[in-house]
Length: 352
Length: 169
Image (cartoon, rainbow over all chains, first blue to last red; front, top):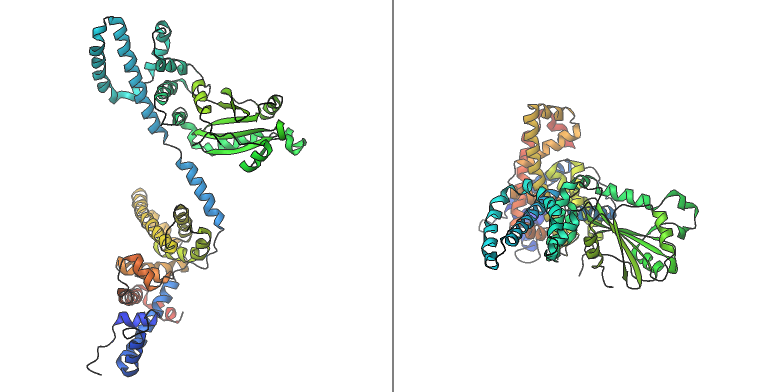
């Protein structure tokens, strides 16, 4: 057998592991060779010991029998992760809002220069001049931004007459529309609102994350509180359908006899329903940003009586509210955002 | 065709935890990473779900190992090495054995170790070849080398007195 090539380790291990195909260079070949070659038979046994020993060593490293948790645990975890990924870091939004506020301020300032300068020929030059300082100040944007829009708010009424629309919006939102929000970030809100009006690609909701960074710590807890408040213990004595019940979307649609009003692109915290048939009221919470939600109360446009009743069951939430007609329903949106933002949000209700 | 991840999960989970455990050396963390692996896999529709899952797991384990090294450095800086002493004090016999295996595995080259762990997790030669980019013909050779190296390294790190007892196990 001296003219025959002996089997190499790799082939021996593949043979031991059962991974040689039948055929001339596969298992048949190895077996024919082993039958004739005592040296390779001895090596095969040696390699078998090595293989078994390696397996035992690895086996000794644990873990002891692992129970497989239910697959639902993975799904829940994925859902939690998805929910948290939707939140943009507040600092990013804050910086973004601050630079926008600055831009608006500079624009306003340039405009006032033009107005006081009077001559039509000076418009272009002044605008150019105003652009240059804007670049210089931007580095200090965050410190510089907040006080400036407040100034605008005070001086705006004096020149209200020639002011173009976006600026008017800035003035409106600078009023303390949201009591829970400190007045400093409101200036940023104003600027972001103005920007959002111009750029419909950007959902205006991101704005909301700027004013309440502290709420970001426990948005889930906040949502829980809201939901708990929605189902007061007093309602428990009523018939099941005379209390707020959190239901699936399909069930809500069945009770309402129509589509559930939702703003596309916003995560939903769920829908609860009060009453049934024509008197049914659905309440959907959607997340605008960290710690900020919009509540959509929906009922048949023909049944105005149920809404106040449901309203009592709910308790009073702060914020603006606005009612629109939608698909034969009247939908009342309520959120801690300026009135015009709310109007814009409600104009985005999906078309089923 | 959509992957039925619930089925893949049931069939793969135990192997995956075993695989991860030999990389992060912590039972809880191995399970946590196994779950995280499936969370990440859910949105995808790979041709070979099992291979896909093990690829994600290997990446997660590598990231985790790096993070662990950073944490350890930090702790050692903070406590002047006291943290390590505390960790050693709570080592049980089981941990000790795992630690011996770990040190033996550390002696292997990255590629040999990967091939060995994939085989240990139930992959066949073809799957290992696809997963590691090695040629199918090279898997037997790599495994032969990895196994021998592991046995030798283990023999070298096990304290002399323990060897006879361990051999009987």
